[in-house]
Amino acid sequence: MVRLPRCFSMELSQVLGTIISNRLPTSEAQLWRKALAQKDQFQSLKHALSFSKQRVVIPEFTWPIDAVLFVYPGKVTYGYGELVFWELKLMGKSADHDLFMEVILPAMEESGFSSGNPWNSRNGIWGQFDIDSIYVANGRHWEPLVEDGRLNLHYTPTSSQWANDLIDSVSAEKIYSRISWITPFDFGGIFSSNSDICIADDDEKTTLDATPSLYGILGSLILRLNMLLRIRRKGHVNVWDILTPDEQSLFQREMEYAAQIPLRRKELVPVASTCPGRWIGVQIFSYLPQTIIPYLELASILHVGTQTHCGCGTFFLS
Image: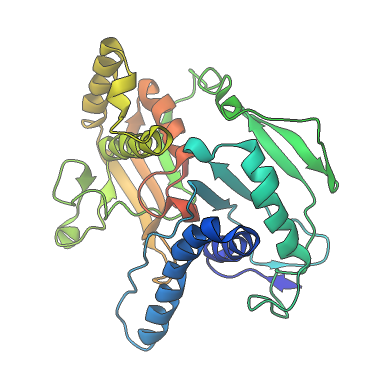
């Protein structure tokens, strides 16, 4: 039996990141160790505040590459032969198959069989699993790279195939009104709660915990895209630079339209103070216009808000 930690994505990041840093040349490993040091600082702070009611402010954990570790929601205790599912999303210039094969996959394999490491424990997952399967997104389909432990060396995915026919597959007949956050979200470090981008209740006016409006979610998508473009092109490039004037006008109209859609109800609960993100639950709007559904789909794939590396900021529509 193994028991996953409450915030498995954070531990997944730390363990894989440490193994990767130990396998890389010194010059490259320094970047990884510097990023991983944030976790050690957080653990010390968490211990110091463990007997107080003060909330621990979790730093923005990340790797030196732009990646999202999205652990599927589910149970925490697993028995022999059961499968644990998670997604790795490589973005920007890190969306590279060779990087996965040469750096990340060997670290995943080592974390499954290695023993004597500080993160190994009797009921922990590390050192006690095999990689059963790996699938690569191609639009809304998953294509096998590893099946039953066997690697297909003839399959080389591209960095853009995840987007194949993605927008065309969105149903034009279905009516959407609900956004269900399947990982915690936190927009506090991005938007102020007294702006039009967030909807704040009276007791939230002095905090940065406001519920994001549709306008705010689309705005956070722009920020996310701008960040990925800067990482990929190393310059002051933003979304507006790559859109035509007509596309810019269309998106601005959709943003203005979204700002007028009222939130009917929210069913949000706070997450544990030692986990990334702040809130999780459901937002119910009067309706979600069909014209903005593709933008929301993209936001859910890329993750929005803060702590995206740990999987925060993704949702599904219904």
